[in-house]
Length: 376
Image 1 (cartoon, rainbow, N blue to C red):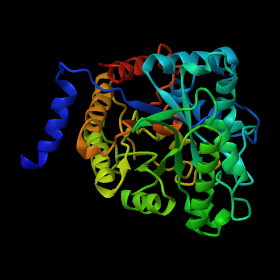
Image 2 (image 1 turned 90 degrees about the vertical axis):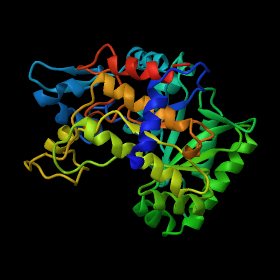
Image 3 (image 1 turned 30 degrees about the vertical axis):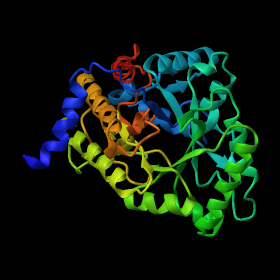
Image 4 (image 1 turned 180 degrees about the horizontal axis):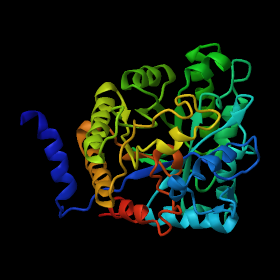
């Protein structure tokens, strides 16, 4: 029973009303935007093929239209993207865009960046702030440690770039997604050069009035994330996905505790700060059954048994409530009150993305999550 006391305390904090006002959280949902282009070479072509399977059509975002022949075509528009903004606003979310680039720098013209392009061009963009998840392929290279840093710092000047308040200072939020191959290819494996690029970014951001970035390293496991944080001079650690599947079909109730184990592991591993990641789903069957070109974990035709059943709305609310309760504890080491969410738009890989879809056109998942995040 003693080993279960921390979990019991979290459950009581999450479910019992409090007479005091709960502090707000900075809840940022990951955007992986392979849903805004149709050209054969674009990732959107692959995701459309994946979701044409009748079993998985409900996972398609609302701007996807099914043709008479059963094909799926992405038809985004400013109006449809504005509907996404409104949906995220109602839930109290910010967005964390996974950044893609070329030549070692973010390239806003790429198909995977079209969601951000719609967002930046919207008349209602300020309703939902955004932050970047800069991969280590978008921070520069050994040959150029300044250009990419300057591009990201310029984005931090925008009116709806996400900031966190710490010690009276507003700091632009930046996630850094670590990829060993990127560091080897662009920086010769030298993390010291990556740190120089980040230091340059900090200098540019301070110089343009954005403030000193609050940098969160995303890597797994926790020990690696902390090693990288120290090497890069970052403020906090987290991960892109949390929890562990077992290799066989599993209920959400059985899976959910593994997310909380990760929250504690990351907080315990760091000498600095940490941010928990909560998942909205872990049902990878759509991605597994029809893998896109870049997906090498699965072979076409192999059994897809390594998945977690989708949570009910009540289970989803409970997961977010427990995450919010954990953030409020000293154990969390999270003065920024930051919560990362997987995900807004990993629709085929998570099997239960938060954005409105053909299976959830009214945004019931977002309403459930919003009730937790907006609670006072």
